[in-house]
Amino acid sequence: MTKMQKQYTKDCEDFKIAQKDVMKGLLCAVSYSDIWHRGKIIEELSTGLVRVCYIDFGTVEDVKLEKRVRYLTEEYIQLPAMARRGVLSHVQPKEGIWSEESIEVFRENVIKKKLEVKIFKKNSCDSSYFIAMKTATAGNEKTLIAN
Image (cartoon, rainbow, N blue to C red):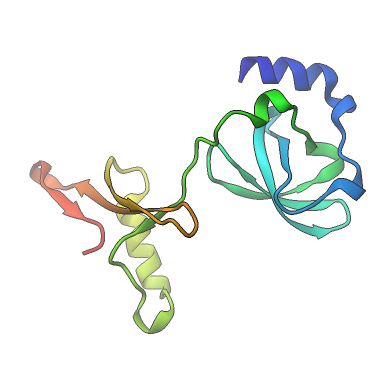
């Protein structure tokens, strides 16, 4: 990270991405709060605006190409992505849609909580992981989030 910050802060203008090169799946360097991270373009929203996934964090953001996105050098492309997609096992919304109430209950159970995650298996179709999550409750008992 330190080396990447030095390189992209110093040579930022040298790595500007040409509009003709913008495409889904392009690995890139993305500036977030003046810190350079590795990303992948997941969608071109309009000329000059792209949706990127920060491949070491898993977050997604819409960013201006000209100001915050640059070509990623081979040195950083070679490193494996640190974020992995997880799918909560045995959890489905009623009637195919998550209600606002269900979403809020989920948030209350996971945000700012210490979680234990168990990986069951890797999905060979999209390389995601099937997981179970537990959170500690009063008395240090563990509660399965799927419940």
